[in-house]
Image (cartoon, rainbow, N blue to C red; front, side, top):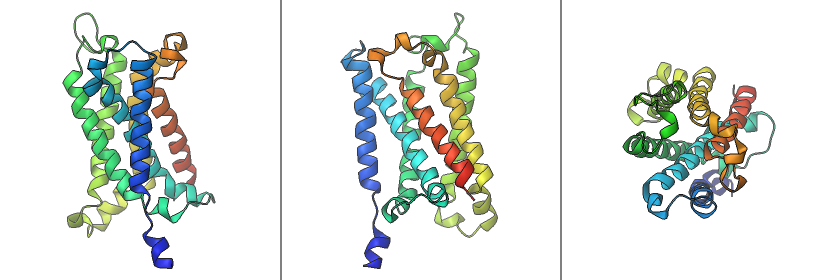
Length: 216
């Protein structure tokens, strides 16, 4: 019985439900109540859904343990899912970065470019935060590689409270400067639905507070 509980893992269900809800929300906001043509779904809108799923999964990965440390009951199935959620979240981030790179141009992201084709200040800060967040997430995932597990100093640093809090700050920086202009104009929200970047930012802020208070 105890062995069964120990091996219980909800990662597959969490990933599937998170992905379906995230992509479904993107479809609802941009296609159904918005005016984005369906031809843009396979790349542009799907990318938005993947990015939301990535940030939610990473928030789960970073926050489940600290949540338990705060005295909140967390099932073993969720605790055992953390590593898979983190690795899947990182893969989604990688996919999001590659897809965004392919479409990041003035014709698609007009608000992020000046008239001369250069990036706006907010866009530059968002891209910097995104790059730094990706690098630290990549380093964090290295900690789970078999060839590095014996390097205790590396593992201790990568999984330390300070490192993870800084990593999450870079992600918050990326989301904040990416979406702040749209957040401040609710009248422009499609169907009064909050932007995906705002939802992801909210998840990450809650996760950051949980980590700040509960991570040892």
